[in-house]
Length: 101
Image: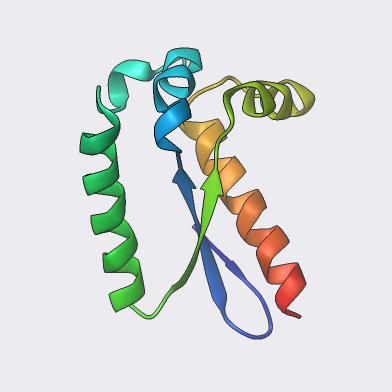
């Protein structure tokens, strides 16, 4: 989902770092929905990002740090799952949009 600003839409994309992918995947309640390897996840994520950019979307990467993400979910009463990842990406996009205005 894109966050619309007065300037342009920004779409947040959940992103992981190589060094924390396994730990991040391990905390997710729906870890079976995520690729088992970072490289498989990265290929898919980059394809999605390219598609969004071809559609004219501005994207921002919402990096998930396992410990911070658990705390972020807990503060909002969310499960640690795809829905929370989606909300997190939108939250990061909103932060990015706010800095563009």
